[in-house]
Length: 355
Length: 265
Image 1: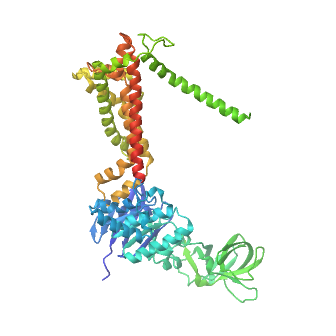
Image 2: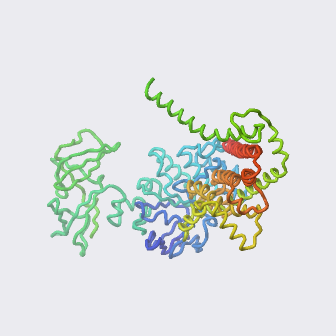
Image 3: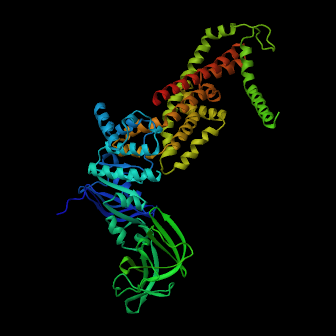
């Protein structure tokens, strides 16, 4: 028997007026996992998190904590804690007072408070010398750490994060992502994280839930979601992708109108398939040397743009009316803008979504 | 001399001119209070401090001073208490009828005060309320509480509401959130609101005139003496009253500066 989930949503709806912000969500969080909810703005991520934290009540459905229904339990009675997008630090307090606050609410003695708050600051990599600083004098990254330390001081069973890193510069964000993941490993607590950044989700999560229009489009490990997206939305959301409109063609092949060519599908076509979209990730595209013998899925076009992405390079290739993205490792002797080049992909690296 | 220097000098002279216009009358009042003659003539021929001696020894004035102070203090405390909750309703929470509340709140502020005073007097009479300083407190609250509510609302609009949610999420009860988060964050507004209430009440004449009955506030005493029985004690009380207001502000701001200093240490 699998372990009982620490927290569970069963058929949860949340309406604001007639608008369904969250629509029929059923989802269970395992003890000690790092779960990330991703989705575009307005997909209902924050609403879902606020219901889990007890700041909003579901219109329908149940929220369970270790099997017990907690729909009506307010935020201050739940063993959960949220790191807000705005961080919501108390501006009139020092760093130490902020971190001590949850302990103070619980009536912990001042000496014990100080001891535990110091430990939490250490855990979130903030020097103890910051203890008596007004929180308003801290930089963005330091405030992040104060917010994290304050949430840890509460010692929740589950920590929620509402896009806390969205206002932080790239390098610091990378550092903080790793630190948050490390803290999760160290404390073995359940973390539920919200972001619209795919990269953040991939780096940190054990499992990812992709949200769209208030519903869950797919749940799975980062690898599953990236490599086997269930639909076009997930595949496009999880990264750049080449999409080609295709139709069923004789002999189990696909026909692409805009390329005027047949394409080999990733697998044997379903009986019901008549038309859809074929998607190939840029890193799964190859450049084909003129001499190389390859029969299927090879096209040629004019290379008109190239972007250097650190160790990799992305080519933009115009082929009839379509533009293709091809991403390769950077090496000597690569083609340049203006060159006519051939490119292709292995059928098993493409994804087909019927329409 | 370049244009910008010329312009700056012109701007400075203009500012000096405006400030003179504002402060000369007060200076005249001060001069009038120390002239020996009973009626003010300019320039003053002989100076005398006897009007101040008379002022300080006058039981009537001491009484008026005490009444004004009591009224101002009561008005400030009650209006700030009402205004804190009013401001939260005004700025922080969404509820049915909020916009009506926001509009109705402003009406007493724009009502002519003498009419408001008269209306309140008729109202009190019909209930059989005896006119006294307590009635004046009530009357001034009708006018001052909305103003203080607006002042505190500005503060309430200005802070991020998620801090209250965060406190509650961290285990704080409603009362703890209010005490530890809401009140401290509103405190600059509460302070300005309190100072405003004291000063508005201290200088208010029309509402007191209609409602104070046998009790006499300082503005009422001044008015009475202006109509009949002018002596330089009138400008003396007027000038002392200005000084008292300035002193109240000075004490208030130094208290605030002191507490701010303590917080930032």
